[in-house]
Length: 102
Image (tube, rainbow, N blue to C red):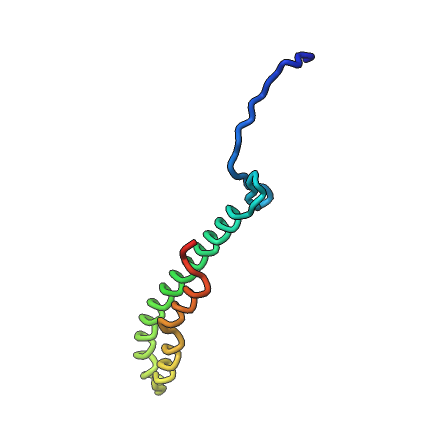
């Protein structure tokens, strides 16, 4: 292997992920920031959908539990106070903290 006339063409890559960081030739982190924001927004979306799912099913379970509580001699008025903990304003606060647009 003493042939020194070997030419290898290297292709330019606009961005490379290495050790969890996106690095581009100009050494800027804009792609890394963009990808990190997108990942965080996906997680916020998952959490938001999970809580919406839980809230819908919790409301159904509360209706069933109220019938059972009457048999025990307890009135179900205590459960109504917990329903006020979650309102639509909480979603607006999350949107202010974690906007879904990049």
